[in-house]
Image 1 (spheres, one colour):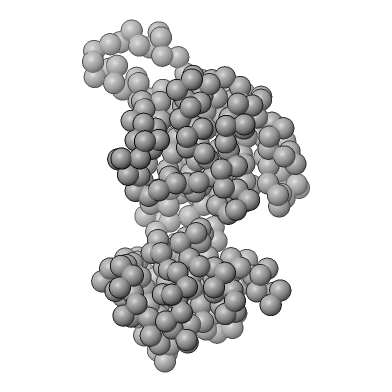
Image 2 (tube, rainbow, N blue to C red):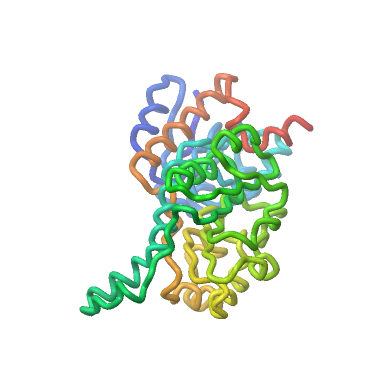
Length: 327
């Protein structure tokens, strides 16, 4: 009998998929506190995890562990190096939340370019003259740079092209044929395109290569009045540099779904100022918070565990597959 630990609330369809197997027992944690999870870890074969932090001490409790399956795609809450050393695959719900995140990205783009926050406030204050002073940026013909051309970046680019935007894409593992088919310009280095864009949308994973990849130098290269959107991971955009660019007027707005510290502490001198600005649109790391995405991620996270038990986990669903191949 295989024992699967579900660390946090899961869509019931995902739980049902696991329970439908006669050789699987599901253990649902009452909370994701380390002490609670530690008590449940002995004898666990598979873990379905959302945002719970799981370090080597916690993961090492189970000597029978075969797979850790993310309810999502980011793995910065897991000690992937520890799991790789043990030969344990880290499965991801590849593509399950891409539509939801792309839609939030575009909601932020539209909100900032159409100045919806300011216009809404103006109407509430009985100021109809705002329609003559708060002018929008039309997306038709505007220039968008998509940094990261994976599943989410591709869907953002497709939506942008539908709006008539000029789209440039950059990624270390770029599908050039797909980009060309979509009518997107390709850059080997995203920095080459910063000076001519109206909007920068970030869709790369957080790792040591991408940490603070958007910093003071990159923001200085962007044209005045540009907008930046980050629905990827906190830590990719240097928040202190972003605050400086907004305060100086270099940028006219930002949309943030993710932060270097989550939830952002009120006492943080940078985040507190950044989050209080009227030209910043915010959401609480909720890019995947749609009914469709929550079900799809739970189903894929559960299926990945079952596929691993059955020896047929797909390579494109294994976050650390390259590292595992080197062992």
